[in-house]
Image 1 (spheres, rainbow, N blue to C red):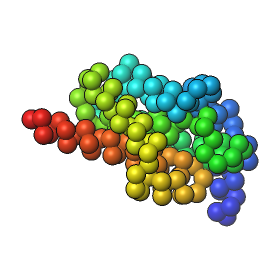
Image 2 (tube, rainbow, N blue to C red):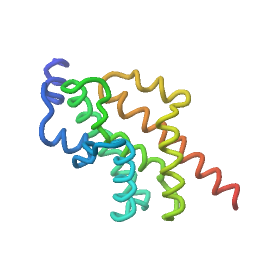
Image 3 (cartoon, rainbow, N blue to C red):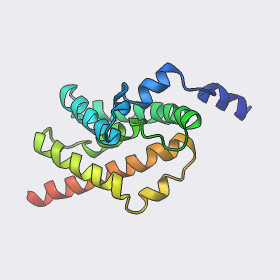
Image 4 (tube, rainbow, N blue to C red):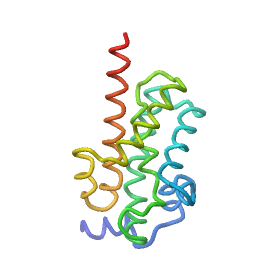
Length: 161
């Protein structure tokens, strides 16, 4: 029963919706540094669509986290492990990085740099989270990079007074 549910939910080939979600509207096909392009797209969506409101951003994070697991699992099974064109993980991770922070271009820019550093450097346990199966591993490491960035920015703001 579990196998048939999983096959129905994941399928065998990525659907068009999977490809659109996984690549964040095809941003993941950017030829140079698709992860950075995905983070930039996440910043633009955050800024222009008003995702700075915690209720809105929290809802978007949850919805796109689970959609991202499904879509990145389908892409991984079709293309291979952690395909570079899958950038929904950067989008969700970056939204987490900015969760419940004041809307500020300075904070967005600092979060962008910190998030990319954590995503590339992968301090503990980020690298370990990549070993989770399927889309869980693709999404989890960027979620943790977003959490590290968010906590660091909240600490800096608290210390600034």
